[in-house]
Image 1 (cartoon, rainbow, N blue to C red):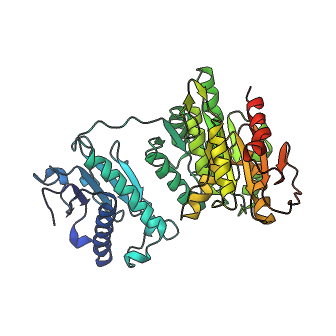
Image 2: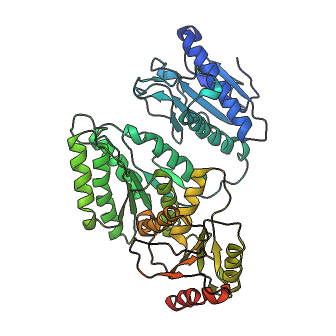
Length: 468
């Protein structure tokens, strides 16, 4: 079917008779899921139609004239090359190319968004035959990518495009890290960063090297995920793209340094990584061992959710973007205290916050979130960015306390760059906890003194003293 007034046109450059029943069903499922995604994200009605033909879309007068977005859907690799879209002939149209097969050889139109919807283990289009409620999260996230691209094109087509905060290179990863890589890309784009590269990575060494070099040269931050596989290997050579990208980073960093520019690199390795080959194991060990010799690089081993926060913080730090923990009052930057409590509903916790605010300190605390991942992210974010830390120990729970103290020790690995101005455990239980972890400059104040201002006096003095 076709509709000349549709906002979105799904273009399938095949004769309908050349598509089998499964492919027709897949197309219908794709359109249905896309419509559901658009209804959830956009308050404005966005219409969709599709066009299946062996004739070029360009030659069909009326069709696509009003479409703001054209989705070129390549269900397999038996399409007619002459019917593929050309950005030159479809000016002012956003083109999204959906690859349902890994062997799509033709270069996509310029400025075209590429989204792969195939299963890398079977080399077939991802399964959309299941009920909507049974679709995997990674499939929904792929459609979310498409929806956001459409929303930007349809709803802000006539508005001034928001200026990118800056360009971040996300290196090609092994297959076990593709989902994490795509999630990072999605979140950075939604935060206003421009993510490179925009096109697929070449498979041959020389084009690959030139492609990566060019994209790195434009970026201020490079993000690399090291997984359990040494693959993907480049064609006709026994070297992985992961290793080559890390080598190219040094080359680009040196060139930018000569131009008085800088690029930083974040390399993430899973905390529980189990390399699948001896070669990958040796590569990881060698990389970690030589890190002290590498400039502008941080190796990070944290949960992936924490790493995402670190990327955001590092990007903001480089661009000198003010974070939520910074403010100004009469030209003086107020200091922040992260207050952690195992009984947030008691009066002591409320008194602590009131006294800190009275002393013109910013109070950071964990907000009430139902999503556990969001809670963890917020905890690490506060831990990384606060100036001082206060633990309100109001319920006897040594395991809880040790976990928080352990996080203090791990905070440099989470991305913390500076020392805490002060660290305090305010003991509000009848029995003082036995602390076995060795944490430098950690103060403990018992419940003997009732006046909260007197109990916090030395803590606040320490913050002011260390800040001078």
